[in-house]
Image (cartoon, rainbow, N blue to C red):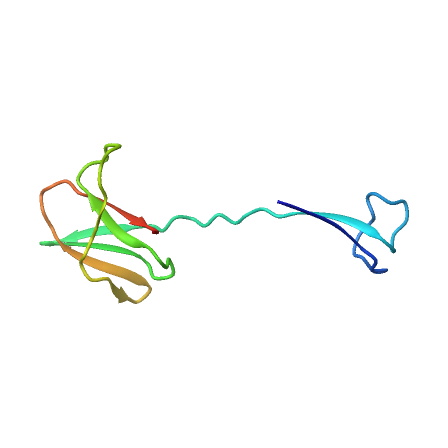
Length: 108
């Protein structure tokens, strides 16, 4: 995104690139680059009969979802286990199993 305009400020901070004199009616062009947030990082650990999934508490508005297949027609379902904040991590404990399961954070 670009912002184009002019100012009549006599102390405009910079050399006027269009008009041959600084000061009155100095033109400016500004380029704004959108900030793309990094996706949240899931951490998955298993201890005994429990699988624990964590992600930073600072990543707000995300829902944990799971599916058993990564095919294009798969259905992601909400994980309904409670999310507990432990220190700086959101934590979900799941019963460990031998079935294949994939997890993601989804921002509705």
